[in-house]
Length: 158
Image (cartoon, rainbow, N blue to C red):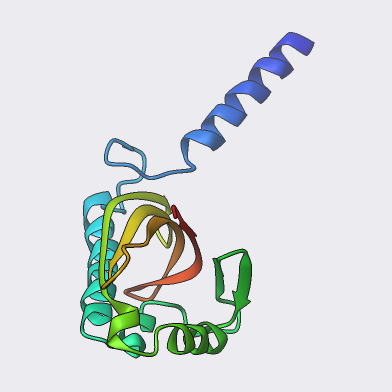
């Protein structure tokens, strides 16, 4: 009896873990199109690049959840809330020279649920005199039809 209980527990854990991420080869989640959700998420991130490179921090910030619950971690500090994160960006990148040209690439989207995803990627700023770069990890949630960043951890490779 104990062996059957252990076997059933192992099967239950395996079933729970198999449903943790939605990938293109996840057959049991037919109501979610990984490709469509990935394309929507990547479009949000592409728009961030476009806004940044146009000098539009407010447009860049439109991709973040406008909430006091937003979490932004970078440079060893954590900023909480959309307003504080927006203020941080405006203070730190207050000129086109400081903003430079942003390129993000190597995005890996992991769809955790129909309304939740993690995105890993690389970023690079090209500015006169330096080219900082690094990695980022985003937690994104879907609100209605719109994907928004709810947590951003950005690291510098420099």
